[in-house]
Length: 97
Image (cartoon, rainbow, N blue to C red; front, side, top):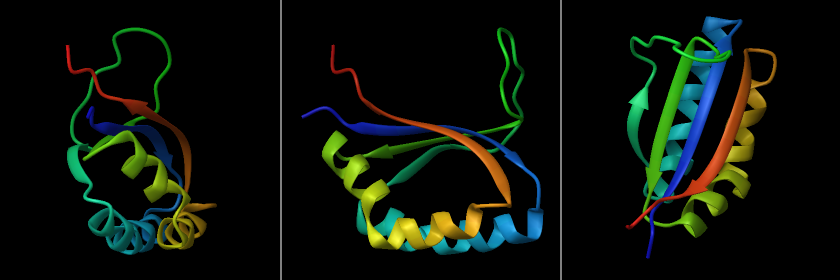
């Protein structure tokens, strides 16, 4: 079964409020088996436009990645992010090729 991934880019506009979101999202990520592959860090945009913060999370499956996003635990955390960051996020199925 292929893994699932969240790929997100963010522009943090309120660092203190964003920290509350980061603390709150841990509950959902633990429950659904998420593992950070990228969490901020240095980056260089080589093509196109991109927000200054990138995050990649790996989940045991695409279903787990989708269930985490839809979960009450993550939705509570996400509400804390509103107004603290502009985000683009996709959930994708991994490649087993």
